[in-house]
Amino acid sequence: MRDLLPILKTLNKNKASPLLLILQIALTFTILVNAIYMMILKEQELVQPTGLAESQLFSFRTHFEGSDEEKNAALDTDLADIRALASVESVSTITSMPLTNWGRSLDVGLTPEEDERITHAGYYGSDDTIVDTLGLRVVAGRNLQHNDVVHTYFDGHTESASVLVSQDLAHKIRPNDWRSVIGETIYVESVPQKVVGIVETMKSPWRFWYAYDMTVISSVREHYEESIIVVKAKPGQREIAMEEVQALMLKKPGRQLDAFKSFEQIKTENLQADYAVSQTLKAVIAALACVTMLGIFGQARYTVYKRRKQIGTRRALGATQADILRYFMIENAVVSLFGITLGIVIAITANIYLVNYFGLTSVPGDYLIAGAIVMLLAGQLAVTYPAMIAARVPPAIATRTA
Amino acid sequence: MLSMRHLSKAYYTDTIKTQALQPFDLRIEQGEFVSVVGPSGSGKTTFLNITGLLEDFCDGSYELDGFNVEKLSDKAKSKLRNEKVGFIFQSFNLIPELNLYDNVDMPLRYRKLSSKERHERIMDALNKVGLASRKDHYPSQLSGGQQQRVAIARAIAGKPSFLLADEPTGNLDSKMADSIMELLMDINAQGTSIVMVTHDTQQAEKAHRIIEIRDGVIIERKHCNKAIA
Figure 1 (spheres, rainbow over the protein chains, first blue to last red):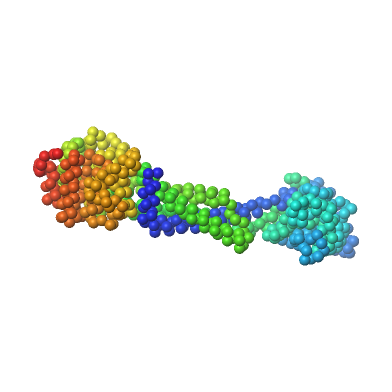
Figure 2: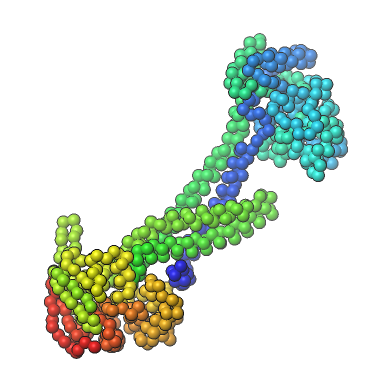
């Protein structure tokens, strides 16, 4: 560390170019730390569990004709036929599927008054088979039962029935004791519904929605012209089940199938844009890191070139190659540390603004520390080659140049 | 003591060999003041660089204060330069961002000396060149002659056996040049050997001995100005 004091004095005397580098490092640090944090949040969002037996599920839309009773009977037949397939474990009809961006969002409150609404929630109408079919987990109360099920043509949410709610919704209704929601009457779009159970996780159709985690699963089964059927294949047999179900349904005269997709397909389509954002962020982060490292490299290379005679003089006066190498490495570390410190100040200030004005989550301290270490190491890596060139400057330069 | 035997130096490019110094023998005793003269391009600086271990030689042998230079690693040569040799350059080669004190401190920082000892040596050297009171000034605040004095202080602070001076008065007017020569002669009188490359025959005459280099050939002009101290 014998070089530290002269380095600090030199930087203090000759501030302009190190200041520019310090500023570049500071801004890069701020942007990098925030971008990495955003990217990690995005990635976490992409792998967030849906609570469903994703690898076994597929769903499709099909249509029915005839009177109300005929449609209901046709739906029952379809469900029974599919259930009878050897590759199928369970099958249900449901009014929409999570992550499909299509479904119903309704007010939820403990009174029928609209202005006393607690939150919005995603609404699913189905029957007593849905918990098994989707692979949900009832964590309090009971599952829907056969005698809970109400049949209706459309707009099932206008019927009073027994419902399950997601744990997040229960927690929103009763933050201090979410289990106490069991047995309560909640009002969904001002219609009373009796909560009989709570499922651990069930998501709404819209991932960007604030109430994505809050859902109501009602025991009202609809038999509209177009119904959604969701199938849970036996483990490892989804492809066979998809083929068998497709073949079975297309045998039925005049039958159309639409949106015949595995749940992974639904999820991939839904996440595609976010996945692209995440990949772009990664590219931006990598490019920014490269630009900064090139900046450090260029600055160090220029400094070495400018100081060739000074380096030669130092060598003539007794500095070893290692001394010269160390000098440039320490100088870079000092500049980087100043830059990182300034970067931390900017990052914290920017964070306070972002949190206060835009309600974003602040970047955790761990990221700042990790970012600082990475930035320091990147700086050292960038300066190594120019420092090695400096170390190879021959001492005879001291007498050879004017 | 410095002893060179059959020493020569050539530079090579892809196709051309340039013989910078023809083989020569030379011995410089402790306490001697030797001037090296010769026209531009004759090999003076090459000679000085080899003497100061700044450049390698091709053939022959060189012993500096009992060390056989040929067998030393780059690191060992740096150490030997630092401890045995003090350099004075034509254009002073001070570090503009450091004040006088830190400039003189620079070679001492490459040694394992306590900060107290370094401080004493720096102040002692600056006193000898008459600039102790300006230790916090920067080189740009000094005249050329004063800057060369600082360079001399930097060279003697390490208490070297040899001072190698490359045209030390080349960038100075005659009055300043005389005062620098007086300083060098004082230092020499205290036992430090000096090898000085110069164009100035008048200043060269002040040494104990003059060596002339012409086209890479070293010719000793036996000349004694005064006895070695």
